[in-house]
Amino acid sequence: MDPLSDVKLTRRDMLIAGALTVSTAAVPGASAQQAAPTVANATPEPVTAGVTFTVNGKQVTLQLDTRTSLLDALREHLHLTGSKKGCDQGQCGACTVIMDGRRINSCLSLAVMHEGAEITTIEGLGTPEKLHPMQAAFIKHDGYQCGYCTPGQICASVSVIEEIRQGIPSHVTADLNARPLLSVEEIRERMSGNICRCGAYSNIVDAIAEVGGVKA
Image (tube, rainbow, N blue to C red; front, side, top):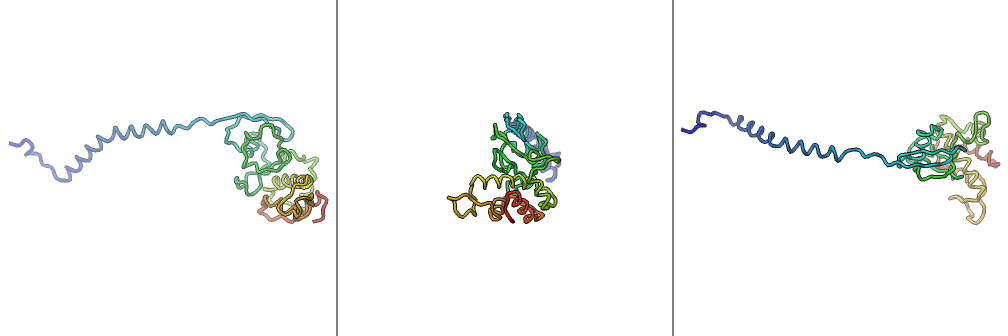
């Protein structure tokens, strides 16, 4: 007599039993596969490096994740929040600072690249008691509205005048063999990387022109 002859299974019972058998056999393998990525995906410690530079006349040394932008080093580590994070892609100019006499977008530059640099932010240009001439001109000519872009605009403006005085040409300089003139056209071209979403451009040009000694 067939010992299984008394066992009565429906087709549905057979399918369920088969599925349970396959699942049981697969569990150990699945557990092993889940455990492996845990080790592989462990977050590595960030690579850090020390950097020393001078900010607003004061020498500072920071130990930073090597991926830290100069803007984040200024804002998050030195708490100099005058430089603003706008687009964070170098397109709006709100993060402009002066480094070794030249304007740069601090969001696009890694802090560890600037060992020994001299950096000036809006906090280093003047004080509430003694404004920088460009700060005073912006106030006089109402060169700001919401004010978010103003620190970057002022840092860029100071550098623009210095660039022209040094004879550095721009895209609109007619004669590359002659010293460029500090004109409204030169100011507009050189300031084109600083965006003012409020649209105070004409007032900004008036302020820069006054400091530069030209008629807007």
